[in-house]
Image (cartoon, rainbow over all chains, first blue to last red; front, side, top):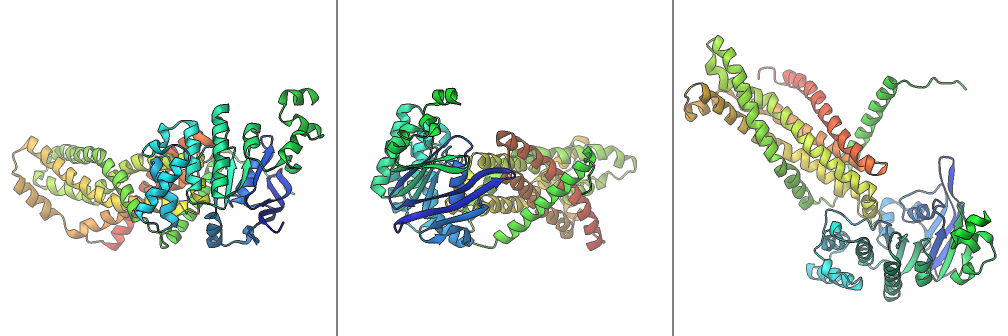
Length: 250
Length: 264
């Protein structure tokens, strides 16, 4: 545990009477890629939003680099957020900005780079996602897969220590899913980032996961390797990736 | 524990009105707190002034000319009945400088700008763009809200001056339809009729109206909920609330200006 970049302890979150997270605990080692599985509505996205400070948990701790982020001041929270990136399910590109401006935006706000350095970083990030020709396009001119790639380029441009992915391949065809997943894996290997990816896409998980956890009813049902998950004895886990069998067994 | 009777429609409406007013107050407080701290985003403020101001000019131009034209055409026969036609330039000028110019320009501005801001920020909220900004350690309130409110507050007085100028021009067009009058004589009559002090209450009002338009538009958009439906609601309520607040505030400010400048 000494090398943990982030540790979640007994995290609880409810909306009214609806318990979303019922006491989730896990850790992620530096450089590790953790995949979080779970059916829709099991609190996967809520977990990520708690980690980035968009939602405040009811109970528990989120320890990043030895410090509990829940005790952070606004300034400390911003400093923490500069060390991470979040790829939203929708990519969340800024509609009113071109691809270039989308990528420049975090660099201009947080760093005092020269114009030349900013442009080099933008081009480099776009080359990494093979979309350098789309640099002056508006987000509305891009396909779903391209938007995800640009979102990814915007996320990595600040070279974060921790990457969070919320359903990075949802709504994409199998080929694009593989492309995006390989891209995530290669970028992480190159930039030596730690990541937490929320998904229910097995193809994506098989490509990027070092370790996986499965959430069920707001609690961790499984934690371990993806191979272990696929060979698990638990009925729910056995059927997680075969919905037709699951329906029969239920 | 006492059982409370469910609220009727009227009571719910009153409750919602005060709830909305409370939200606007806390949003305004947040704005006044945030505006003093860097980054100041001057370039973004200038961009909004252009986007929100310059692009509103065509509709303000048409409205301005028509106000002057119609006011002069309606008033001319009445003034002629009392042999007071020579007061027409003065009457129209004072009306548009002190009341009609500021209020009508503000209502037009609210219709175009407040709804636009509401829809734009609402759309950014429901597509997680505001969350994305926040997660990137960029303060979305400063970047999206403060810049827009400052821009609307700064641009409306300029738009109002422009609208007043066009109303005075419209009045001249109406006058020369009835009788010949040289432009120099008309300008002389206009200048003689107004004092610098006449501009103070009108211009002071436009600053407040500009603030209201920006505040309501950003508040409705920034706090939009319930997906695309919420964007529509934000856009519509922004226009309704900002127009209503402009008219209510105007009533208060007219009374206040009469107390402060009784001789004007």
